[in-house]
View 1: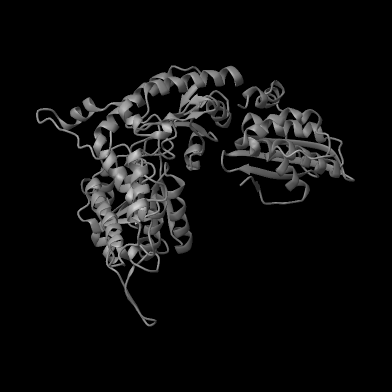
View 2: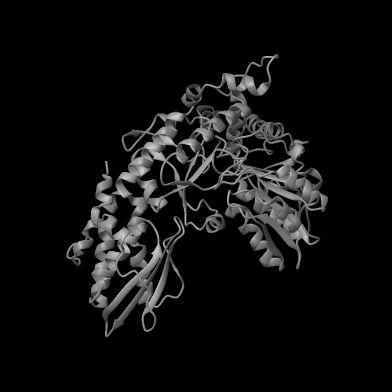
Length: 426
Length: 148
């Protein structure tokens, strides 16, 4: 399936059903050249998608073709190539706006990834609004990238980082979150989907709670956007950050959505070219939003790749991807639960396609090495979420995370791999 | 293709399950903490030396089979050795697990079972964590050692 193919829609059936009915995993797999690779002499079983997804031909070709045919700097030259590069860059901004249903394309700021997106908000909005004695509210299941920047800000300002707790299924305690939204809370920063546990947070409800107290909300959407339709207007979030590389796009590329009225009042992030209207040694006038936040020559090829990734996901159907992954999640959960010695970490009712687990007293690192020899790529470790590991009293987990191209046969291979681990180390 | 049995030899698995010298030591023993931030492995090494000879050496911590077995066998190998002998042993061990053979280095003896580690570059840090921690204990570094 290529990015150019428009999916036909039947008028008599719900869109979700149509997408699922047309979804063919083998067609999807054929779009990803890396999936035909062999690892240690075995077919690659790639189950590390929460770390980064593989890239389809549509994305690889779009990036290569940009460099082959269109490469020039943007927003500068009068020449044709510069015009083409600028068009490619700005049309991806518009595509991204439609992808997450932002009100305006100027609400889309291109950054290096979710981490930079969060740091941008911390350094601009955060530094202006958080003062001594104030509070920043996060949750106990945040990735380090949605903990450390806020911790640094709180240290600098003499503010306090508050953490909403989770239960032993890995679900947020919503009442506690609500209770922790106090008169001194200046911003809440929450994961849409937990990278270590797969929990899908009720972010719309959380945003409603925060707004009821006048608290703006940043959502870390890195693990959500690859798997589900995100509508920032429906969520009513103030900021939403995500990365291209987890949604079949290139690394080093991401998006920070911010509501216009907030972006307009925020100071610039970095100084340099492209973020200015005019410069004299006495005074600089900053460019308008979003260019104010995009200093220097950006990753133009990365933006082109993001555009191709969005088109690719839309061509398959985001609902179809989600439905396929959910089916795999249920199958994987069932198979892992039936495997003696396996304990799933993260058993929230509402989950995205992450299977985090421990196996008897065998260390995840040993499991990862043995699975690797079977051609199976999983993540082992703390998943940049050490507080989550501490909560469950474990140093690490094995994490299998799924994407559109994974199959039940690959889950079966994982289970066989686990049996092999038990044979060797049990 | 690297063979897993070269990595997970019986001796290694046995030490991982029942590590030797797995205990704390109080004064006058020196101690240091090691940490591998990539996998979360932690290791504390306690060493009591007198006149340059290692009287007692022990460790505690949690980690994978390779790191535990390596720490366990390190304590066995170094008890009664002089500090220069311990340094030489570390150099030879390090050379072996990173695949850089040294001519005329110290004989690593039973630690040869870790030779297979060099086929698994991602696991070298597991095998050397205890040794780096030992170095820190001997040199009085009070900051935890990190493999990164």
